[in-house]
Structure formats: structure tokens, C-alpha cells
Image (cartoon, rainbow, N blue to C red; front, side, top):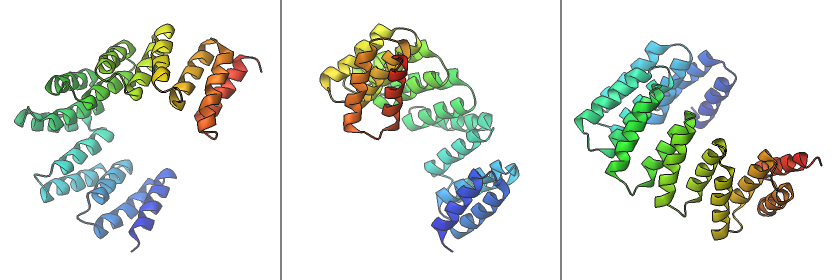
Length: 257
């Protein structure tokens, strides 16, 4: 009856690709916790993964019947459908909910996610752009738009989204790092360096910025001695960080050391 132990067992079986055994454990968990959303979602996920789609749908339908007005249940239903090749159904359900409440920001963001899961990045982007119009001073929808463009390899569109976001949130380093990544992808190394140095002017000991600038230089064979110095400073704050050690090794390699 130990729920945490059974959950660990189910995930271990899943990692071992023993999907039917993992499903059997998730069924027991769902019976042990009939009102726990996490347990029911796990059961549905594992059913789809074990090629028992009808069982997965029964679980999702039962969740919706048990709590017909619960938004969290509906969100999880959309995400589970989208994760398991039913993106079109997920998108249709999300769009129907949005049509019933078109001014609701959360419904629009869910519709954007559903369209992304359905393989419709253009429709997802349109929803996110509308969300930005609704709440122009909110960071969330802007970050989602930039990430969407990046995930689909639309680097110019991503750079434009991050550039606009950065103009509104100039002191957010995460936005700057995302923008710098897009600039590097587009070959604008000078501007990528410039925005990273701007972070370091505000935060001279920001280890992520130090590492990022080192990696930018090492990737393109630029100022390699400075690259080593930069990442060594980052390592002085976090000496066991694997990403920073990787950058140091890369810079040394580029220096033929």
C-alpha cells in the first residue's frame, strides 16, 4: 500500500520500456487514489504508452465526468491527448473552450499549447501574439512565443520576439540569453557579444553570462584566451558545474591545449 514506492516502481518500469508492467502499477495507483489528479493522469499516460488507447481515453473521460467544471482537469486532458498523438482532438477541445470565453487569457494560452502539440506552430503563434496584445506588460506570453519559434527553428522570428521582450524587460538575464542564442544562430556574433556584455556590466559575476560568452568565443574561434578567463571566473562560483567545465575544455581544445 506504499504509494510513493509504487510510483517509483512504475516510473522505473517505464524507463526500462516495460510499458505493460508500468501500466499495471499505474492502475493500482489510480485505484488507491481515485480523487488524485496526478494518479489519474499517470494512468492515462501509461495506458497510451502501452498501446491501450481506449483505456487511456476511458480514464480521461472519467476524469472529465467526475469534475466537469474543473479547469485543471481539462488542461491535463488536453496535454495528455497532445502528448500521445491526438493533438488535433486536443486543439479542437481547447479551441472550443476558448470560443466560449475568448477574453480568458488562460484559455488562449492553453489553445496555443494545444496547437503546438498538434503540429500547428503558426496557429500557436497567432494565439500567443493575441495574448501579448491582451496583456502587453506580462512576461509569460512573450517567453512562450520566443520559445515556440526557437523550438521550431524559426530563428529570425524568435530573435524578433526576444528583442521586443528584452526592450520591455531589459534587466531579465534569461531573456537576454535566449536573444543571444538566436543572434548566434543567425550569425550576428557582434550583437550576441554585445548583449551578453551588457548583462556582465550589470552583473559582473553572473556565471551563466560568463560561461555563455566563453562558449560563444570558443565556438567561433574568437578571443580564446579571454574565453578561458571568463569561464574560469564562472567556475570560481560553481567549480563542479558540468556545463562550465565543458566550456573550459572546448576553449582549451580550440587553443590546441
